[in-house]
Length: 324
Length: 309
Image (cartoon, rainbow over all chains, first blue to last red; front, side, top):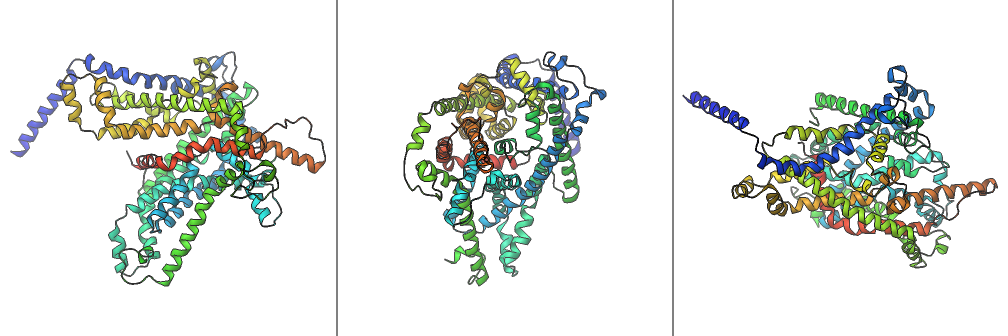
């Protein structure tokens, strides 16, 4: 009885749906809406889809006269540029630099916000907590142009570092002249810039943990330290995993603005993939290396997508945490 | 007092270990917050200190010989002036234009039963994963006529699928009956959008506008990639280039002093540290003064981004 009426209802819905689909296209209802979305469609087609044709350049030898479509195909069945990347020592080095730089950034960038969030969450004085959090967000709102200008200024002869050393009677140091100081400065800057903002999501997750869990643990005699290990850390694990998956995709990407901004012509000359893409591309002096730049950029993009998907699959299987 | 040390669940006195931990933790957090501020405070002190006194060294977080001179130099400089104007125009025009486009698109994608909606969503999603790369953008922007014009700041970045999704999610929370009853009364889609949707969406409009405004103010790579006309340089770009030039020059001078070789053909007119400090303050003051009051809008963005669709 029940089943029959349900079936009848389903049939009715289905016939209604068919009727809806068969109804004539309602110009007066939809046309204004299409007009509303038209600017966005135009912007995307003109400034995203048209430039996508440039991916072809990775398989071509760019010739300014021929443009993107008119340039001749590259040798080795079009894969000449990709082989050339690995034959160019400077580019191979920039790939290794990127990997090393990002591997350390990834680890620091993963643990620092968690640690900072745990520290902040232990503060009970609300106004103090609020002020500290607000201060920690400051670097996030500054542009990379400002940040690199600040670093240059701080490391100069009369900058903060040397002023502090001077105050304590120590010898001045010139970090910008030390090739080996580039990476540490980069890492410190990245952590400084991102740790406060990165902690927001963890603090929200911690705030969302059921307080009864803590109360029950306290009654069972668990101290605060044990509570953090057995309740707080497992509580933020899913969030941490998702953020980790997202960041692994950027292992070959790099912060162009910071690296390019820090580079000087004397000691800090390290190149990464993004700066090479720029310098072999439009930042260079000749269009003859454009194809190489496009190939490098394309390779990096493909690797990023593969990395993200495979880490996601791995995490899905191991920890049952997935982005999708 | 004990509330500072213990959770509510605890009964009795905090343990000695707990007290030590809370004190150490508070101290560490204090030091960290100072580290977030220290670079900025040092540069602020430097910008308000006479250049001569700064060169004596040892200037930390308070000006010793107070002066407005550095700011006078920066604000009277033509480059700063034109940079400020371009940046301000970019923020106002760029953010408003992008907001209108994204808001309208979000409203359209809200419609149930819109023919071709799936196609539109796909059209907007693909560019998040695929990009032609810099070289191709450069070639196409030149062909489209936006290269080296003010429009390169406004048009290419005017669409963001992320912002669209954020706004559409907000609109989803508005009861359908409101829109339906307006439709039955014969209101056109445009009327519904402007008269009903927009007033109801004020909070999300303000949020997205702030995101766009800060992004426009802070961007300098668009200038690096696509602009060669000095009159179109933004404040941030000038700052970036000035700092780079100053850093390189300084190394060269030091190398020359150490090796005893002459400096040769070097442009010595780069900004000195004090003036550069004043430039940094000018470029960041709007942001630094505003962000404590608008941070909640940005935090809501972090939260939205973390929610799985």
